[in-house]
Image: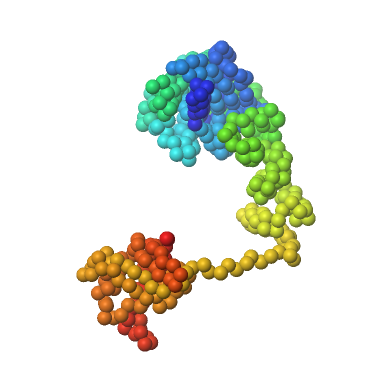
Amino acid sequence: MANFNIKKRIIECKIVYYGPGRCGKTTNLEYIFKAYKKHVTGEMVSVDTEGDRTLFFDFLPVGLGQIKGCDVRVQLYTVPGQVQYSSTRKLVLRGVDGIVFVADSLKVRREKNMVSLKDLQKNLKEYDINIAGIPLVMQFNKRDLAGKELPLMSIEQMEKDLNRQLKVPSFPASAITGQGVGASLKQCLILTLKHLQKQFQWGQ
Amino acid sequence: MNIVKKLKSLLGEAELYDSQGLLSDAMAKYHSALELIKNNDQLNTRQHIIDSILQKISELKSKINKIEKAPKTQELSSSIQDLIKKLFSYSADKDKDSAAFEGAITLAKFGQYKQALKEFNELIKNDRFRVVAAKNIIKCHVALASIDEAVNQYRQWLDSDIFTYDQLYKIRIFFEGILDKSAINKSLPQAKKPTDIKMPEIEEDETLDISSIAIILENGPRKGEVIELDVSFQSGNIISLIISDREKELIESLNVCEFDNIQFYSSIAMFSASGVISSISEIKTGHRKGNYNLDIKIKSA
């Protein structure tokens, strides 16, 4: 849940990158840390295993500067994607204001994407949050593998699998090259700040 | 598809999945490639390729094994633990002790049981959190699979004077519940009941002796009429009244559940209160046979 310090005119909000294991959530944050250094307000912290799988979360604080008279600060998190870390995902998701759902474009991960989206829906429900009501964007990651004779799902297929009912903004991306990373985050931030503006009646 | 092309495709996929950390998917592709070669003896360097794939499968198995054997959680550095407390405790507006308690709980939720144990042991010194900290200490030991240590800790508490008898009782019941759930057969010693423990004084009933009531009838043929009834018996806040069989119509008028404003008369005071009719029944025996007994429970003044 966003913090709005009226006295100091500071808004702090939380964006979580969600998705199945090895889909590129941490790679997203690593790219943002490198490419948007001037906005990063602290070190990126990764709590992971030896095999560089996220164990608990990644964390990256970002500042957006002044918007409508308020200093807007964003905390970016990732969750561990492996199935067995469901309880950790729920802990990290607490107080979330916006979500980037990172889907893996590899055909072999199709089912994992859908299971992960269902898991997100379930965890949000436990916080009385409807997935259709929270700022959410979809990122179809690993598009850099297209055209290399590798079994990749089409964007149309991924839209059908994951976004048919939600109809949220979606972005083809490659977290390794950075394609679509900034655009996904920007749109998520726009949706989140609009949502918070309504909530706090900020700027009115 | 040409077998060589198919083989290259499978091996290419396997390598990609391996590089992406999708080890099970990589394993499946290597096995498919192996199957393809075994069923086809036309390839020149068949045996070399088979050996190469088997080597890859062996390396994958080691990687998978290493991941599976890795501890599900690990104790992190103190700086990360502090960050976890800062990011996930949500205790900014709480007092220092509550923030400390929530911090310890957060650490336990993130599997940082050793540090959580240290912090709960500090919280035991605080009367506000003593029992709940003790329960969480037990939970941490259970999570660390150190039941014996939990039992030893409990015994230490029994021998110390940190906890009262009542507190130890609550802790023991809690611990026994955990042991039962985990199907662990361990009996826990009970705290010695202090000999000088004072039995609570039995307080005398403070309800007034009510002699009669007055009710304004809200429906029926006598609506609006104030009727007075004598109390035949009282038990705590439930009064019993006798209504004559000649006043059967009154029973129908009293056929509502609740009265908001009943006047109650006692020898020393008069007061208004709401009351609920808890029962109306015909008296079947005795000299009051044929009359009706009405029980009213006094609700609030």
